[in-house]
Image (cartoon, rainbow over all chains, first blue to last red; front, top):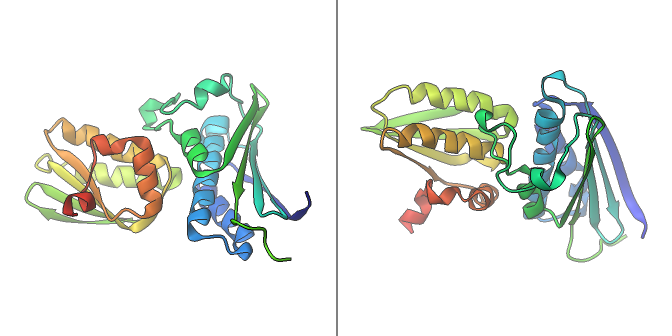
Length: 147
Length: 105
């Protein structure tokens, strides 16, 4: 199926870029007139994925995050958040609700659960020492947009 | 950003903006400063002007609950947006953090 729009953003893994990423995904999808609930879901999922990259993948040393999104002609949004940080050794364990490696910092361990709840699908690929890619999908509209 | 009103041992804090990992540190610090007053036993977080919260907010709210539960107090929330309500429900926070709007219904 054909893609009608695509974007790729690269930015520093800094906490202030969490809100930038939320605004970016809203701006990229808003022309299709998704509901406010759908926009809110996207903002939430992107916030979680970018936060994971900043906090867990890079930590203090920082690095680069790539936010990529494409809209298919049937109004399906494909979204990915990629980092080149420490990677995840055990993805199944990391995706369990309330699992966190940083409880002392009041991390809830709910990041992946929120992504799964707010998006239609979430897939995580990771290599220790090389980085992580979170790929998500969300139907933006109930019916295909008018071309 | 936050402002607060004190009524006896109840502290009502009005949160503003968005609660993510970036803003969590300053909100946590400001709340902890207010909770240094040991006569505060109950914290009410008014989220009318905070329509967005990601999972970073769960840690902020439950962390303050831990502080106040040691004093025999409580934390509750009010005026949650639909987005915040979903995070609240997903986290299971409702078991210990009351939703004041539910109480009023």
